[in-house]
Picture 1 (cartoon, rainbow, N blue to C red):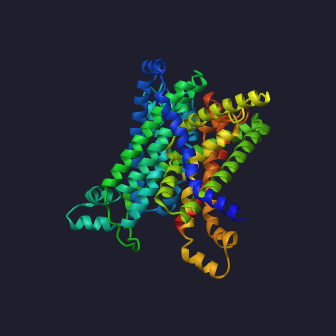
Picture 2 (tube, helix red, strand yellow):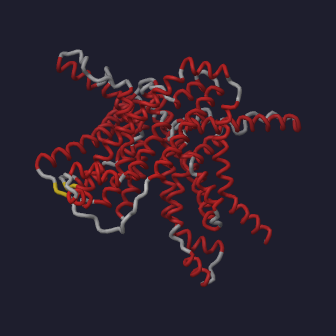
Length: 541
């Protein structure tokens, strides 16, 4: 009995280190490919794709960051500081685009505004013109616009929280210094909100670098699409790993620069007080602000939802294969459920280990274990696939030598590879809500329980579980939805025939069949509303 307790305690202590090693393994495998002699691969990449990839990635990142900064900060400032018609509605409704995957917004935009789409077709008939002046949606500007509309809520949410803590007090301080409202915004309120805005823009940049579906729909070549093409079109896993190594270096450079930027910023947070009274807007000022907010909400959420609904009803009523759709739905739900169960179980073990053994090494291991969200899905797919391929080969050779059994593929091309990649990618998503719930279990609670004779598993079941339950439920819901929407990992590591809703969307949009992609897209949007609901409920508390 004592030995069994010792082994369980040892596993409890080692859990964060095991998970950290699992996260670092794909990173090490991908980065180590740089050390492999592959001069011909690098020569081919330099002569053909690499310069364009770097240029496209740079302008895409710069454009999306600029667009989300302007829209997100503007929306946050007006909803936090001013009072105007519809402010209460817009304050939460502007988060709804978070439920819309960027690749869904992308194919809706192409279906509507492309040359053969209904908008240009109607305008050509109405104006009797060739519409040479109409902006080209299939291009860099179109990709930047779509991703800006999809990712601005990250900046809006964090910047709004910063501006809410200031209220109109920052403007009053600015006016006391002889500044007008616009000067007060740029010289007082905006600098005070920089840490939160920087955090939101960092999330936007990570999502932009990791995106695969949106750029694939627009046929806009970036590192993620190049990795996929190198693997599945050129059948060169070596070229794919070389590209993945470059992308992971770019990601880590961005992380280091962001940490240095934050380290230089020092802000003293005043004691939390009641929110200041808002500044009332009237007349054309109020109409202009309300119109701006409705335009953003309409383009980012309402218009795509309406078009998707129309396409879904039309395609379903004509020739939709409902039985195949049920297969896609079942694969998505079962895969998301398994991933949520595994990830939340691992996170609970890590959080308990960090609570019971709060050493610097344990904290660093937990920090490493949760960096996977910064890694693009295409990079993780390569990083997980390569070691599993090697392990399969070793086990197959061992079984053949010892038992004369041909095992074939054991891990490669199975759900194991997908679930490992999901766990690494979404560990951070589930860690925060579970860890926040764990902070509510103070040592005094444990002491009070022990004084009543409650120990061990009984304490976990009767005391800890009810307190942790909301955090675990939130974590599971977030992971469930993220796995349903995840495209590159699923597309690149799925077993043969294991198609999900996201894979179905990719297959249909790659062939320009927007209507056939609408029904699975609507399902993903409805699933994406779950974390928005949880977020709004948490904000109201």
